[in-house]
Amino acid sequence: MTTTPLSPASPSLIATLPGHYYTDPEVFRQEQRHVFEAMWFCAVRGADLDRPGAFRTVQVGRESVLVTRTRAGELRAFLNICRHRGARLCTQESGQVRRGLQCPYHAWTYDLDGRLVAAPNLTKMPDVDRSAYGLVAVALREWLGYAWVCLADTPPSFEETVMGAAVERLGDAAAIERYGTERLALGRRMTYDVRANWKLIVENFMECYHCATIHPELTDVLPEFADGYAAQYYVGHGAEFGEEVKGFTVDGSEGFGRLPEVANDQDRRYYAVTIKPTVFVNLVPDHVILHRMFPLAEDRTVVECDWLYAPEVVASGADVSKSVELFHRVNTQDFEACERTQPAMASRAYRSGGVLVPTEHHIGIFHEWLLERLGGRDDRDLSP
Image 1 (cartoon, one colour):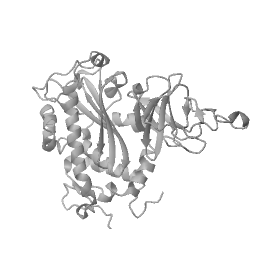
Image 2 (tube, one colour; image 1 turned 180 degrees about the horizontal axis):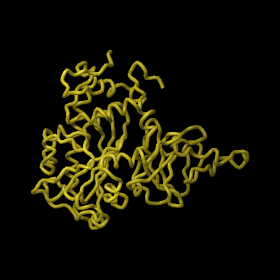
Image 3 (cartoon, helix red, strand yellow; image 1 turned 135 degrees about the vertical axis):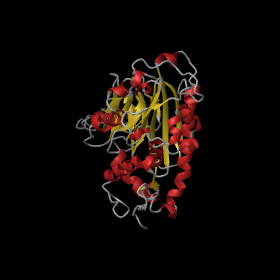
Image 4 (tube, helix red, strand yellow; image 1 turned 180 degrees about the vertical axis):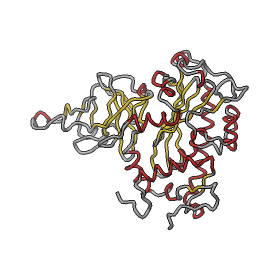
């Protein structure tokens, strides 16, 4: 099978990745190792772990990662593996423990800081270093109200690779900080199980060439998207609401009051930020929508989407359904499109890939970034 991308005859077109990048389990394994396990990964919203002993497990590449809140109120992350015989420590996705984390196999028990504190007959083994046999720690940073974890022995700069993505898109760090995302409250969360490769979802989010075709509600609110405007390609650009539109809602009706620190030039505008590899941030004047992707297989990606509002909006019991419904429809439309595309990635018609029109050329930059992360590998060079 050839791995050479299509060479378009027209200078208006550039090549995509070949189809096997979306279907080959070995390509996905390399992405797990060189992308998901090597970069910062947005794991869990900090407010979900609201008390000591609260925990959540998430899949990061090939590893199950356990995030918990300590007695001191800090978030910590560990590999979800008992140091004794390797059993999965926490078998539930989320929960609450009273004192410590106990392995259900042989009852080795760890405190919330990861230190081994108890095990059957442990007192008869005084030579066992309880710190050395504690849980394996994972690097953790908090930003935008979320815990980001990194499995790399030497994590890349968080400021450059995560916060830097927002600066690169918006022009300066303050542009995203004004939304005060870490102070917002969760108004709604939806989880989507998408039968498509994670890259198809990223590529879809980055362009709007498809918007006029499948997003009628979105283009009613953001008319420039009907022209396929590639907003993410332009630093600092936010799509402007339509003249008659009052809020970022499914029918254009009024939303909620502008978040207090959002600047005048950010009002009535929508900004989208892609933070590679698996996070999308959507900024509008009265709320923030954040997507976290969890790639589970070459053809399956779970997406968790949070709608975040001012705390007083959520506390008042205000009806957020019209603003939720707008992006829920966008999500559903997008994910259905990705699922329609996934089977074609295995077709001989896509063996050498497809093409990108000019408004999609920035997706080519994403492809170049991925190939660099994989060391330029193709299916002739996919050894670990």
